[in-house]
Image 1 (cartoon, one colour):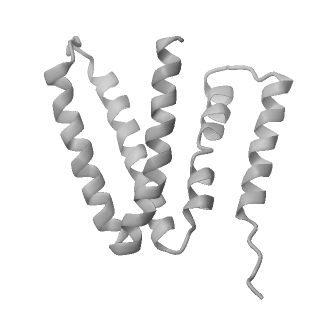
Image 2 (cartoon, rainbow, N blue to C red; image 1 turned 180 degrees about the vertical axis):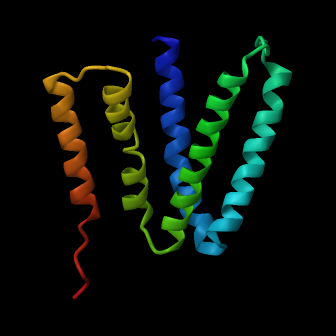
Length: 142
């Protein structure tokens, strides 16, 4: 099996378990405090990277700015997902919806990078949007 696929499967597992841990934490404390602990954990991982990696750290300021902007946007996404969970969102609904963020990436890649979509990919996007609609429909308890 290819390395990229194994890493993708690991990310799937990590993100899947994260959805449950985020909901459990926001059940017990504020989304702001949950986010602070999330950031501290990310800091520990970030601090370890230079110790175990063998990267060339000579990068340009524009690349640093792009990476930092990505981190900022990711952090805002995490913060708002914690808030959605704390404000009554069910993990089984909130997590699948927020993890459709690749649809935004696909749209931006189409608009700004000139990437093309096939009919099959368009159908997949349509199914993903239908899934959001179906997941967000809750019946009232009688």
